[in-house]
Length: 286
Image (cartoon, rainbow, N blue to C red):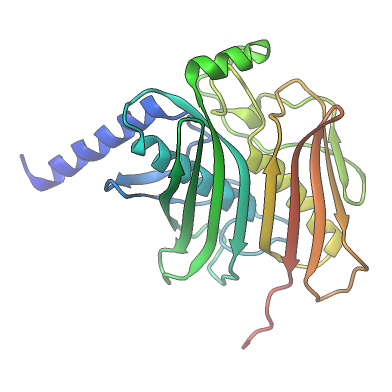
């Protein structure tokens, strides 16, 4: 057997092992060229969504967070002592962004490392780099709640509903109520595809994408995400109403870094809160 064939078999083995251990599926899982060396999990990804009207960079910050959080849970899953399937629900995250002039859609490399892992919780750190320039575009720390498959099904059995095995991931089509405020009468199943099988819940990354988008409307100029601190409190299930809010901290000044307090609600329940900092791109030559 030649070395190329051996490498392909090893990669196929890792992908099969991951599928048995983790809670997310394609299309939400979109990492490629996955690898695990016993200490670090690495993968490649590029954007799957059209560019934002205002957010600049090779990938939206929320999608960077999506791929990064999945890479982190893969590292946790591969570090477990058995191959049982578990649900790794992101509960906290600290995102640090770095301005990049890489073109939108550029391939990015993700490397995740386990920092803490216990029976019920875990934490991973993840970096993302532009594969052409080697520049860092994101550093991420994610805390997870770890649930066994039977535990997850017991906790959320009231939200079970059939999902399509080959559904395509879609973005939200929210109604704009006013600046900094959007809503949905009911979360459709399409944006939940792959998250999770027969328990369709709106991915945190799509929630955050909506919050960044409405925040960028408030700043009103091209921008990039310098920092985000996220606390996820609950899941927003398909079929439930959703509301997305962003409030600018202090007066708006064009061309100046600005902070936002954001949250997503389902009915009266706060599903996620985020403190967000947006920055304008640096001037050419700086």
